[in-house]
Image (tube, rainbow, N blue to C red):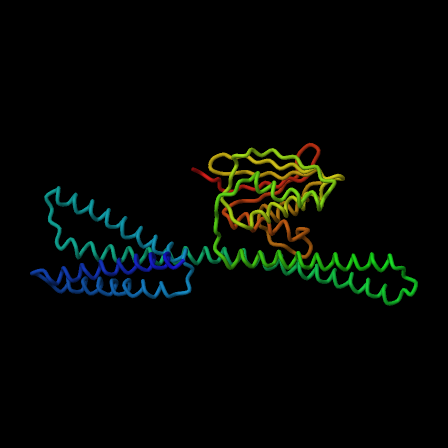
Length: 355
């Protein structure tokens, strides 16, 4: 995103150039005084700081979007202060007053205001980064807990199967085949965990790239896989062909995880309903099942971003992964237990494709 850095750095540097131009204009005039020279010197310092600061920010490690945010605060300070000063000076002139060195007087005020707004921008960025770090720590905590639990459980299972093969002299060929299939299933589960962790790494390291995705087409492209994995699944769709979202490659993974989670924890057989609706430039996707619903503590964890503890944590990585993917594309995910007959419901809200 070099263009963002170029724009942000240029805005900061142009502010400095404008301040320096004011100083040049003042000294090019016919009258100067001590007070004016002091003010001009202060403006020159500010102009130099902005001019050099733009180049430094361009080469800094600050995120490109954050640089644009700082530049936006700088622009806000310049535009608003200049507009207010213009109104004040216009009023004074209209009232018959006289404004001495309006360019120099206005320059120092605009320069100080711009500098203050840049500081506000950096404070704003620090707060955003603090929230981002907190979310990344949450992700690390969830992944760490899940991986440790998964590896420990898988190791215990493998050791048990290995001991059974080693110590049971009367084991039949069919038993060996069954044990071999169990080992394969464990390996497949570990591979699936590694794939999820790779997606999480990408969510942290890459900027989101979005494009139009037709919801019905996406569901139909995955339906065969779902029915193969869960042949008893009863899938009902309530989605019109014109529902499209703005998302990226990973949203398909998020929806698949939610459907598979619904099948795992749904009834026997699992009855899954997917609904899609659009309003107010948003698309709402509901995935409902006929299971026991979500425990209250899990609803609080997912819906309110509460921290996990050893005694209170959600059951699997797939639900968290879906939540993070949805948020990656500026969406929201919430879970609840349906009223009436119960059953779980996951609601995903994503930006709608607008013409």
